[in-house]
Length: 313
Image (cartoon, rainbow, N blue to C red; front, side, top):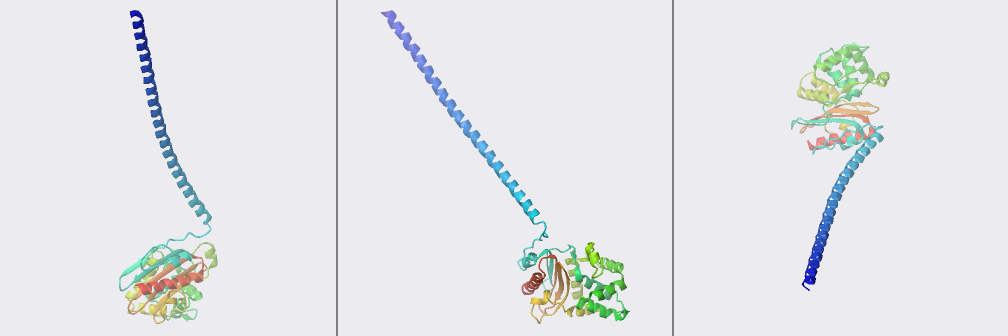
């Protein structure tokens, strides 16, 4: 009997140990599964994060590609300059109608100068003629000397006031292109270059042009005003005041305001530089536009820009 009780005791202990072992194994298995599940979730999140980053990078790459495609698509058109934002002047009309725009406005009262492309070279067209006039007057050449039957003074007047190209060419031939360019350099007109005569279409086809900059034109205008009561600057001012082409800077200003200006035009060029000699707020203004899309619209835009300067300075 005692032997049977002892055997039962061993059986119970054996079964208990088996049960404990099974419980422990089950517990460990559950923990391992939870751990594996957590690890997978972490890895899954990591993969998702990497995927997201990759997606962002792909998106950025796609954006860049779109920009390049856009540039390629518009490469046949001149790339527009970006208008500078200024509280006094809105140049958006200028930039809407030309691929390349340079402007400068100088207030003599405030000694304030606003510009966007001060030293950038622009095709000058007939604006180059004011520098030829300056050479003649500052070198005190004889104005009564005749060139092919006309006085130098008369040729200068026609060159400026009606933009006579034949008169200009006669002066260039008489003075010499190299002498004119040397004078421009000596005067600090760094971007002003006379490389061809007027009406020389073959030179234009070959890419030969005359150039100037906002800074050079502004320097000329400021010099005229600084010495406006002295010879020969007073005479140059008088000649410019007789300008007959008034479709740009003067076009929207009050009729009583005196304007001394010089325009320049080619098929894709519309320029105007001038002195707005209002008695209370005089200013100098330069607008150079190349790669013009619409000549009529840009002329109106130049007039509107000059009116802004008049009203806000």
